[in-house]
Amino acid sequence: MLALQTAGNLAVLAYGLAAIGSGVGVGLMFMAVINGTARQPEARESLMSIAWIGFGVVEVLAVIGIALSFVFRT
Figure 1 (cartoon, helix red, strand yellow):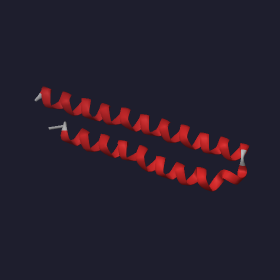
Figure 2 (cartoon, helix red, strand yellow; figure 1 turned 90 degrees about the vertical axis):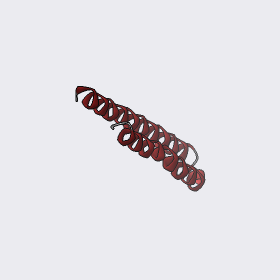
Figure 3 (cartoon, helix red, strand yellow; figure 1 turned 135 degrees about the horizontal axis):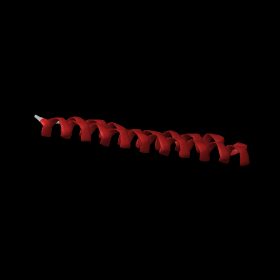
């Protein structure tokens, strides 16, 4: 019983690390968009479209992390 509980705790810890990584990635990405917009305002639309694509890719990593935490929790 203890081994199953330990595996579940490790899965939750792994998901927490995946969520932290995704949060840092999204923060850095939008920081770069804000910086680029401040330097060159006419490039805002192209920067934002690229940022939203990147946001989707980074958030997929968090979804994969939560899915794997449920898979390895057994």
